[in-house]
Image 1 (cartoon, rainbow, N blue to C red):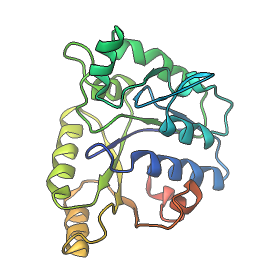
Image 2 (image 1 turned 60 degrees about the vertical axis):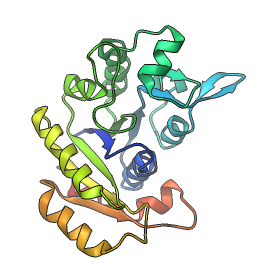
Image 3 (image 1 turned 45 degrees about the vertical axis):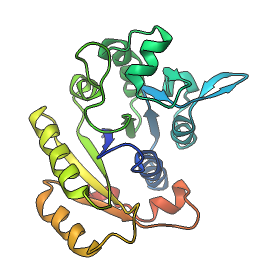
Length: 226
């Protein structure tokens, strides 16, 4: 039975892609076929083949199902700014409908394990009143939350979990990505998150010397997902 999830974070730069690539690698190690999508990405490099985003390339590298870059990341912008602002500057209508078709195509490949990765946190604006969270709702996917563990992360995590529940989606699991290992009372903070978030912790990713998908996968437990 195939599994598909939308992966989001408590904020930007909390390690969503690092964790997503680790989850995909863990799935591959477990003998599953993998696919991924990053519907919109800003902060892209200009290359001879077109705009390329490092996060989308990291996801593509962990896909065992044949996918082109454009399938993984159909909408790319060069400036490293909020996607709706980058879209406005580029004259692109960035709506849920514009992203829905390409992501449904990724899901239709029916890989054993598929991840659709958001941008930034849960309530990232698109055009008009659309949010990127509306894409997750339209796809009807359960959500994996990457918690960037640092001062203030408990409130960010709980508010995000509340928003996910309010939107009618299941929080399938969360990952503690310890981006500040010097966080005061680290273990107590992690215990509070475990007590209050209504989903299993799929693992904690500490600071590791070589941040590769393989190294991150060692800290994750896919079998805790429904």
